[in-house]
Image 1: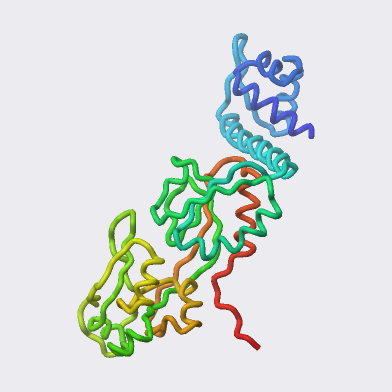
Image 2: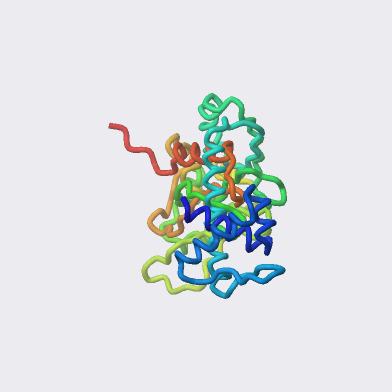
Length: 304
């Protein structure tokens, strides 16, 4: 503890360039600050501060030690704040940004969450646009793909794969493609990213012996809403490339049929993100923990 007192005295003296000013901040005398710093210097075997009749300044060794000590004291402040937050009841409005399809995977988890944390008011925004979490005041966002914003903290929610699906009626009319190259003879419904307007690529391995050029997908329909793509595929408009977990139930009911599973090679991940800050608020912490604990994308085990 004496070492910590010496570090605090040293940092405050370095910041103010004065034992008197440091003493005022710490509620002790200038003499006490000077003695604490002197004991620290004696223990370390180096001079940390240069003294003159008018002011004090950092030595070369002191400048290096000062940077480390600043981080140590900041970490201690964070630890105290975190413990203080843990004692608080999570409450207040929580703004959450979700992809449109998020209602299928997130809403089933929220009833239990609101029962456990009745003082949290959830404000959900379902939008496939890539929101600026910091600029738009979003508390938590759920996203898929690659993370690029260094201002955000993140935890992985889980991986998912894709499936190519069509309706049984469509396959009855047009046949079932046996290889990726056969897709060039089928109608495709394509997802268009709202932020860029680009069409999503269908990540497929070439079939053995396929030496053709780039795969060209005949596009019958494009849209920026996954729910609309599911509906279009179910109505027989064409084949769709969609996250497997959102079409699993429709496949189980016989409304959609998956093809070319052995050629699909791309998997993605969902992440939960929140603005980076020194202190994680209780409402964000419990919501993130709830999603990470209860959200699962893997296929359910087969019935016994």
